Structures are given as C-alpha cells and as structure tokens.
Image (cartoon, rainbow, N blue to C red):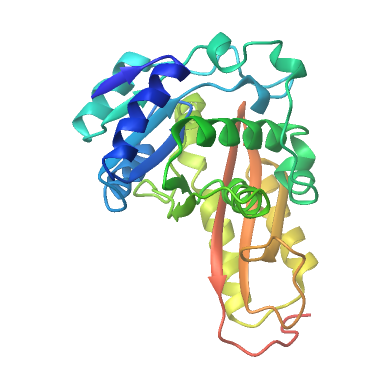
Length: 291
C-alpha cells in the first residue's frame, strides 16, 4: 500500500490509474478505524480495480464544544489494517495541505434544508463542513465510486443530494451498518463509553426496533411514537437530542400514505453521543392504529 500526504502527488498517481483504464473506488474516513470502516473497504473491491482511502480529521465538521482536539488519531495502526485489507493507496494529508489558507474562512459547500434538520439542528455547521471536505476529496481523488456507511444516514442523504446538484460524476454507494453482537452500531466514539455505559448503549438500537415494529403494525401517530421513544431512552439515563420518523431516502416529514420510512435517533450516554437508524419498508395499509 502506498501512503501519500500531498495533493499534487496524489493527483499524479491516480492519473496513471485513469490513463490505464482502471476504475477507482474511494472510502473517505477520519481514521481510528474499526470493523465498519474495513467493511467499506471490503465492499469497495467489488466496484473497482483500485481502492483508495483517505484519513483526515476535518476541523470543519466539529463544533466549538466537540472533540476535534481529542479525536483519536491512530495513523500507524490504521495503516496496518488498511494494508491487510488490500488498499492500494492511502491519502493522509496534513491540515495545512488540505486548507492552505485559514480553514475557518474557506469556501464551503451548503446543502440547504437537509443540513439544518435532525443532526444539523444540534450540530450547526457540521454538514457544511462535511460536504466541503467530501467535495474537495472527490476533486482530488476523482473516484468512480465512493462508499459511505448507512449509520450516518443523514450524511449519506446530504452527499447524494450534493453529488446530484453539482453534477459530480461519482456513484455513491451506501453500505449497511456494521453492528456488534448486541446491536450497537460500530463507531469510533464507542471507545469513549465506560463499561456500564457500553452495556446500556444497545438500548438505542432496541428502541428504534420497537418503532419499526409499531410502523409495521400500522401505527401512523408519528409524533406520539417519537415521544414514547424519547421517554424510554430518558428513563434509562440517556439524553436524547431527537428521535424522528422520516421518509426513507429524502428525510421528508412522512404522512399517512408514506410506505418507506427511516427511524433515526441521536442520544447522549455520559460524554458520548450515539447515533443510529433503521430503514422500514412497510406493507400494511396506512391507517391510524393505537391512537
């Protein structure tokens, strides 16, 4: 595996792949890799002859009270895992390489509407920072395919919208969430959980599972279902930012004729913020049940 740190040398290298007609699959990450990241790499091999991964902890995605300075940086360990997974190229730029000028004043990519709801409401500026770095990386790597985990569902929806709106010739592939045996979604931030919090954390996924069952049973009292889930999470010591039922793929507010949903939640457990979601494809007729 080749590791590159500069944009110019990265472009020169991938240019050779393109000249020789090789397709490129790309997995952008912030490092501190876990099984979920490696599953993205595994899937990437299905779409292209060459697989590139980036590791860059992007300050634009972090709010003033978030963990940018303390976010785990484990480049050497990550390199070992990526090499073993058959990655062809790792791009690991410095902050100065990615943002030659003052990064706080850099041009940003905005996705109106989608970026200000749900996680965007509680993390102002996060999705603009994410969208900006994704567009920059797409311009640098010029992949044919890019893979993102479905755990960050809203992120995936935002990326699909910006790629469509800006006519970026990259196929976006969403990859199902990798979970532990108890259902907890894999996340770099899970390591912040204490032992007792780790035992409690899978209740987020189980609570969403009960919402899925309610929707499959025909309930369409969305606000009541959301409120019930918030109370359940609060009762066990979590601090929910939100529990939401939205239309799958668009995150639009659902109505009684919506058939495909996604249930999403973000909740604090101690000092750790957990997010999760489950898509729901219902077959029952739309009607009020349990109201």
